[in-house]
Amino acid sequence: MARFTKSRCRPRPAGTRCATTADSARSVGFPPRELRDLQLHIRAEQQKPGWKTRYAVRSGVEGTINEFAHGHGMRHCRYREQPKTHLQHVLTAIAVNIARLSSLPPTEETPSPRPPAAFQTFLDQHDIPPPKSRRTPGS
Image (cartoon, rainbow, N blue to C red; front, side, top):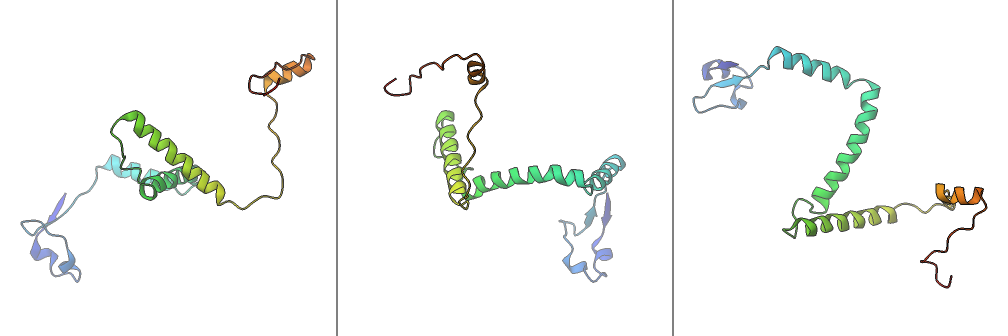
């Protein structure tokens, strides 16, 4: 750590803007060599395209978290108990997803049907009729 007295700091053009302490001295800290070397290595790594690609995913997630925290008040909960708090978070997430989906432009093509489950494929390969569903009315 380096300390500069007020008399050393004032002659500079920016000396009046220096942050001061109670004894009007300015201190500047220097990290240990290991930490400085690690910082330089990390900063060099951040310039590579692979790192930027990986960070883009994190950036998107952090943007979503920021939207929830600041845009929808998720830092403050209406409830004190964990189950009610969880329910509030789930319902807020559903509302945000609906809002995001409704703001998407409509697509001209119809979505492709979901591929059959492995069980249904097995039934089809062995010519076994599908079981009657309890959900289908009248069957």
